[in-house]
Length: 98
Image (tube, rainbow, N blue to C red; front, side, top):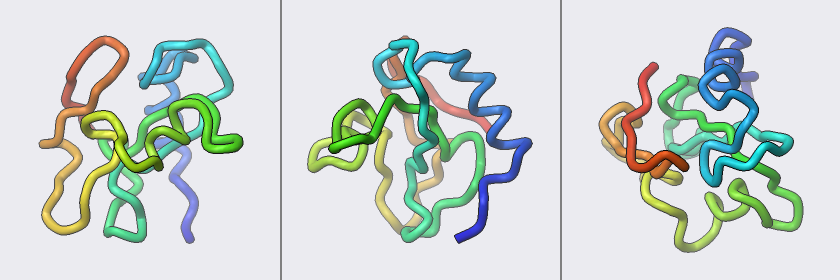
């Protein structure tokens, strides 16, 4: 598995501004691929979001990997393009850009 490039990691953290992009809480953040790498997802700012904790499948990162993630948190394989799939951000539904 390759590492997320520092430039992409920095862009995602800047966009999040220290808050979970799912719930808006100020918490330790983990980077989540909306379209999983195993499904062909890339290391791009539109495909990666900063979510609060995964520990014990709790927090937004755990929810993103659960059976019913919020809109745009987990994209299917195939032709899904993260820049064209809306993400349910704590502000509301938005498109993420690279």
